[in-house]
Image (cartoon, rainbow, N blue to C red; front, side, top):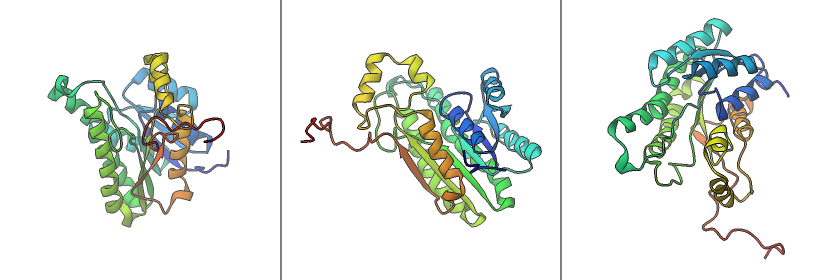
Length: 258
């Protein structure tokens, strides 16, 4: 570990498990103070205790909760350098079976939550005239999709548009705004909720031949949060093992390479 975030303070929203937890661990390894904000109090507190973070219960669909997380970070550590809005929900629902309430719930966490995180962080970062605002987007929505992901895909495409607008508006204050677009990542949800056949079908679509790890995504966030990325804003990094590259399913080379 190189101390790339030494002395920095980060909020990670949606970090009790999966990509958020992996990113929190990676940031702590590199010297950051981390505030873990999650809407699952017991799981969130358990994760915070495990990895050495500060926990605050947070429903990011409510702006008051976003403000409270920012206020806690500043009161405890004196500053806010990084916020990662990773909270997201993805109930599998066909469009014809999705109610307006279902739609609004996904929009509220994924898309409105991204707006809340950015707005709350900006108030502090504007005064500091520096900061990193980061989002978990996805390849689902901006590039690809599958049945049952209409609301989820719409939120992730929306996040990408919001990243560009926020990057432009915040640029004169020394604040960068970027995102990471994961492909198929081996999280607890995949391990527990998907069968072997489904995982095998996911692997078959990935040229590198494996699902991504949460650390693969965390490393992309670490780069965007670090000083090395100080001249990068308004963009996203795809972390998908090459999943977006093939035109079809016949991309595997034979052993001879022909």
